[in-house]
Length: 85
Length: 150
Image 1: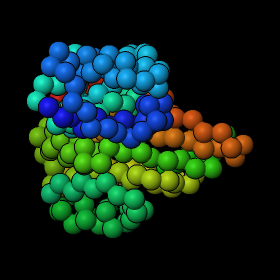
Image 2: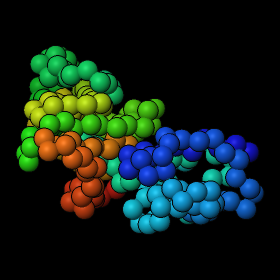
Image 3: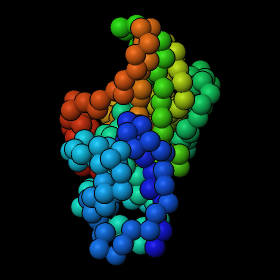
């Protein structure tokens, strides 16, 4: 099932795009699984996701940990810790 | 009662305070965050996650309204490019008594700093740019309210 994957801030710059619509295989079940699968797609993806401690995520616009499930999600976003306010 | 906005336009603090004063609580508190111009900063860019920012700010506002007796509450956060001295965020509360107004105001800005999907990029007069790093102090400030978050 296709998922919209969004990137923000330096993650967006490192990957080289602000998002992509992909259909990960069934064994990709969590955000961490997704990052691993995306890292295999290009060197840019691998570099962007090299340090999971520097990354945060949202699944369907709710903050989620990297071990959160993505099954059935429409949208997953990957970004650095927020710095608003 | 709750006014939450994410916008590129400047914030009219006088108008927002007038709305809060008009809520009739008797005690109005507010916080305004401005772009600091230290170190040769020429521009601060606020990137946002469209859609999620407003939903996150609304959740934080509803948490505050559930914790304190408020007559009105306002959260406005800007996005886009800004100059030193520009307003980034405004938070305001109205209540019958000052403790609720002041505490709810502090709660809103403390949580907003950790739970709203915005990212700041600084550009300096020497041409360099860098993404601002999140601070542990912000997580600690939010944690002092121990519990409900946006």
